[in-house]
Length: 231
Image (cartoon, rainbow, N blue to C red; front, top):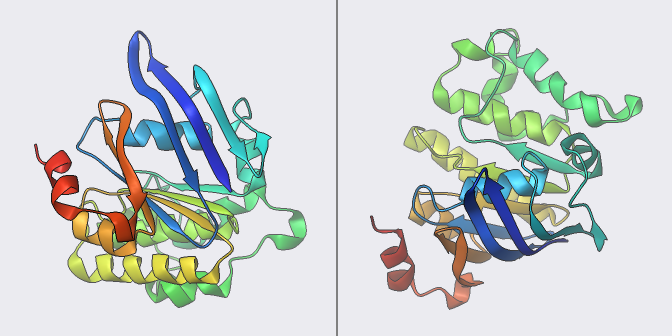
């Protein structure tokens, strides 16, 4: 279980997160909602260690990891699918997937069949360069690369951004499959409300760096959430 407890985060003099708290549990999807610029990506960057927090604590299975480097968190089971995908355009699909080996023991350095079961197109394109894939295929590659690390915590930052509807459905089915396995906590930052709502077990809504609403999917009042997402 991941516990984020009252964290603050700054970029220079600008305060991006204000006493943010949340919990992510295995077998559940926590959806993080909010307009652009409210701190959603900053929260994910803090969780995976790409940005230092100024106050509060990030705890994994009861241990404070707030000062741990990103590579240490990766070895603990944290995997990130960043906004914009950040694949290596000049590497092949195979090579992109194999970059996930870096945090694994030598005996576990292989691409699980599960990756190709979820995204069959990747198997067909193993020798193609990442930069030659469509945006949707690159997103599948980014998720596949994260899954190679056999994560216990998977964070996804707007995986539907700029993606065609058919691949959005594939990504949704993949997230549902990973949740049903029950051994992975999933945090999903998403602007596409219907996609986020349908996948969420729990949700938080952010505004100006703060959590202004939270609850379970069953408790969600859609009209109130939509109001906070409207520009």
